[in-house]
Amino acid sequence: MPEFQYIARAMSGQEVRGLLTAGTETEVVSTLSSRQLFPLRIELAESARSDERLRGRRVRARDLATFYAQLSDLLRSGVPLLRSLELLQRQTRNKVLKVVLQEVRDDVAEGTRLAEALRQHGNVFPELAVSMVRAGEEGSFLEDVLRRIADFTEHQEDLKGRVIGATVYPLFLSVVGSVVLTVMMVWFVPKFEPVFQRLEARGELPWATTAVVAISDTLGNYGLFVALAAAGGIGLAMQYCRTDEGRLILDRVKLEAPGAGRIYRSLAIARFCRILGTLLNNGVPILNSLRIAKDATGNRILSNAIHTASDFIAAGKSLAEPLRSSGEFPEETVEIIAVAEEANNLEKVLVDIAESMERRTYRYLELFVRLLEPVMLLIMATLILFVMLGLLLPVLQSSSVL
Image (cartoon, rainbow, N blue to C red; front, side, top):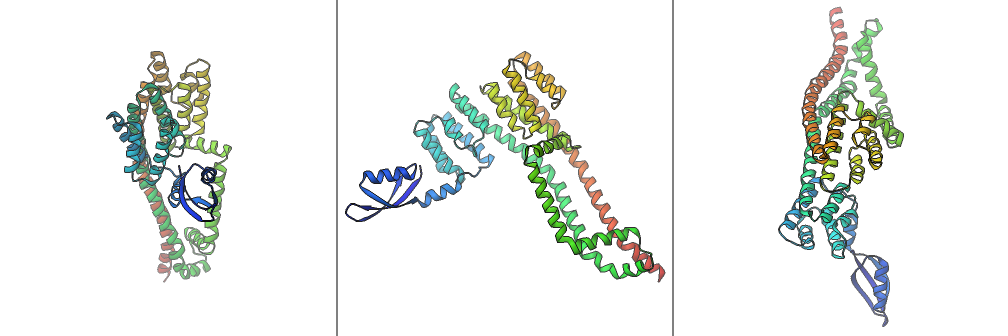
């Protein structure tokens, strides 16, 4: 609970200052009244203000994975839960996590179950982890669950890192190429205008040079307006994509984009299968597991298909059939799920599906990036060559005339 610093006046008229630990200011007032003190000023202590500023911030997934793994090790070694939380709260270097763990420890000390204490910090602990912890508490295998959460979190971070790492170089090429072209158009092309004007007066200016000069003049004279218009257009597009209609359109584009759509779809489905299989393997009911796993796809098209499947499950039907009917899941994946349901080993098969899809997607991603790099280099080289031809053709014509 936070600390409050107060200034109060005693019955004798003496001014009293001090610190109180309480849940709210009302509790502070009640405590002071019971001590026959009249509060003049009550505010959060400096340390509490600092903690308040940290609340609401997120914690890096790798820090959470370390916390889960260390808590699992401590509990497996026989250290009581309260003592384990206290030790981890003291040794963590993440300031946000330190504040959160202190509150979790206080809640557990007051009799709250660990899962419920974690749920109160939804911005830090994902619902996947909370549900698995609850299942571990109910089944008395909390240590194993925490280790699995740690491994799962590490795996997801490795996956994210590989995807980001694969896209860094193409993005770098795009940025550098755009900067080079802009610099050439704004600062380099205008230096050739005297030559261009003489040729234009004789009607000998090539069409490529005319286009280059027109673009250069537009950027030079109206570059700021073009940048503002582009920024405004991007802002409006982003605002539209936050609406339900825009989000659906964007999610559909992500799934159907040439090349990249296949990667995005495969990774989203693999993430869904892995999370669903992990939850089922840890004793979380299938309807609750589906509710959590559908949001993990990060795509409303897929989430809606999974939501429909959960309705079928609630009616006592299979999972595979509605997934097949949606048309959003690969046929081979649906067939494997159907066989797994018949064999009653769905939780294991789902994790196997995720690993298989991730391996295939890694290979396809590497191939896609290898092809994307020369394509982008070719595009940038073509654009720069076009600008250079626009500049050199008039010069060569002028030299030949002279």
